[in-house]
Image (cartoon, rainbow over all chains, first blue to last red):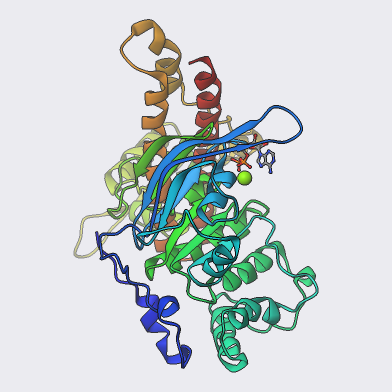
Length: 277
Length: 171
Ligand SMILES: Nc1ncnc2c1ncn2[C@@H]1O[C@H](COP(=O)(O)OP(=O)(O)O)[C@@H](O)[C@H]1O
Ligand SMILES: [Mg+2]
């Protein structure tokens, strides 16, 4: 199934005046069928204090443009390590990774840092906001680093905070916000440069039920507009917002399931909702 | 169905169709609504057991309708209902028996069973999310019903994960 990526166009009214071509154009240079992300034979072992931890033990994975993929599995299964490999935060011991058809094996740290500003946005469980910067500055900073003018960065920030229900909070410091609000700021920061790929590691991991619902709703909304998302989560409710759920156990993919895309039918649901005497 | 109908009648008399509408309004579209026939059958039974009483009311152009009200016995039954706590939900026993017995039959792989069951639950979860999104946010009762179903399913999924963790170690 092909998806358009309306995000780049729908917000063109406020887009930068001198766009860098790679940041603005979210189409695949390798053609429509090139996966946005492809991994082959990824292996990563951590050598810490004790025995080596075989966190990722041979993962092949392909994520299409516009797809929303959730990775679930128990704690320690290697989900975060996998996500870090996909975002270049860690490098694999072996295996290869292609971003939009381009092999990343030879990327330097500096090159990855650039990709994480332009093509890849990341949100983490503990938000990782800069605590002594205001909400507005947290969101604008990556835009400025990516080369936007202060005026453009502010426009992008206003739009996103508005959209995420944070208008009026721009002068707050992260510590003054609830967990759910901080995660929305983190989401704004991750999306401010219109990355092709959004990576999220347990974005609802430190939120309550209501905060989880909020994050779920927002990720679904961005996905509906064409945002490609790879999400690691423990939360089945959050995972079920994805088109595809990968079950990860012990460093390997145990199952890779495409979920129903048909609208809600009675089957299965009526049973779980039935109230009995 | 019996006790919810009694509860709806606690406020005052009503006829069958009104009760159906009350229920629909309260629980929203998410709840699989009983059809009017079911409601009439249940009302008939409640009347037989003396918990409610019906009164025929003539209507000019339509057949008579029956207006029901709660009897003292009905009110007592309702009170007793509120006194007791509800049973806790049970672990999906059919699936568990399948899983536990799979190695002895040689007919199914445990991990494959878990994966299949997980897909089913995830799809149901997804449908519940859609229902929640479709249902009015203002209908708190309906939203809570869906959220309750989702949290139960979440627990089932967590439990499947535990099963998989334990059983994969054996392989
Ligand atoms: N930086 C690290 N140093 C040493 N061991 C690590 C490191 N990161 C993760 N691990 C180990 O790798 C395994 C997988 O961890 P992780 O990828 O965080 O799993 P998950 O996100 O699924 O909980 C665990 O055994 C963990 O202890
Ligand atoms: Mg993790």
